[in-house]
Image 1 (cartoon, helix red, strand yellow):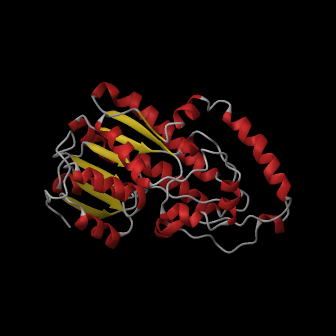
Image 2 (cartoon, one colour; image 1 turned 135 degrees about the horizontal axis):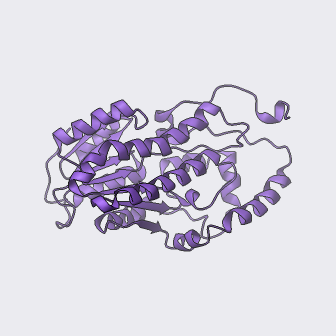
Image 3 (spheres, helix red, strand yellow; image 1 turned 135 degrees about the vertical axis):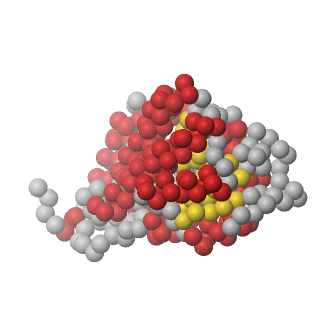
Length: 310
């Protein structure tokens, strides 16, 4: 549903006024907050995600012109058709934010391979397809693509193999794309964010895997922040076409120290996981309502501690 601006809710005009912005994964959490912030700054917002009714409600509630499309970002043909519909309805986007993402936790050997692969597909392949489908528009508008990454792109974590691999891959993809299109006027940024108080993280905290992980995280890595602060940081990054967006700021240091982090994580995780012995850590499946919408759910099968290892 298209909405026209309501001046009583709009921020002062800025560099985003009148531009078209695409946000994937905007049904709730960071994506919804970002869509609202971009709309308040005068952008015409295209919301792309899986939850049709919820997306329509979010679009209807934005202060500016907006439209929602139900699409799976891993479906190349459907996403290309949606990009064409966005172009015809709102105009050529000059901002594209690849925010859609899912997460699961658990030992690699115990994770359902279809669920594990789905996380890779959504977080990495879906981001690349989003960039590819909207790249003609960004070339036309000399626009900006923002890849939402994570602390997981910098700091490998046990029991989060799919999430870490996909976020690190998405980060590398964005860096490679930046080098490929910079001479044509398109800017590419990566947003490095830590834990946010979203439905996905609240669901994660109810699982044994994440309770174990988070109970052994040092400060400040363990701190969960209001997603509104991340939204403000991302909007500033978009307005400045930043190559890197960090929040909390200490992630700049983590980025600089990433070469030594895997060894440090391995030493600590060896101690923590060895202390548990053979106690099971059931895989979580895709987390939260967004994970439920993305599917698939884990199939029923015994955990790895019940079947032989070679």
